[in-house]
Length: 75
Image 1 (cartoon, one colour):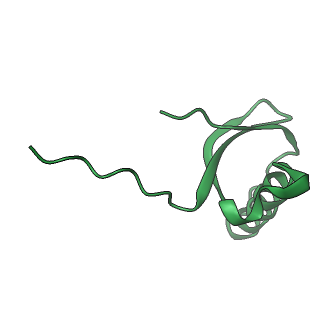
Image 2 (spheres, helix red, strand yellow):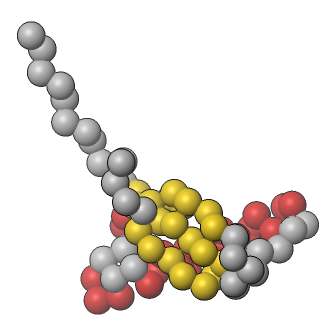
């Protein structure tokens, strides 16, 4: 019987983001290289805000400010 290969880390961390208006987005990817160190998960907020601005420029729909950000639970 063959053994399963262990999952390979893809190099990103998933976050759940809640906005001021109550909207929730799940599994937002942030590169693992941007996290860690003394800042912890704070760089994830910056990365997601920049990503939201880029999306808003292309779609014309803006997002409200981020209320909370938390790592997604593993499934």
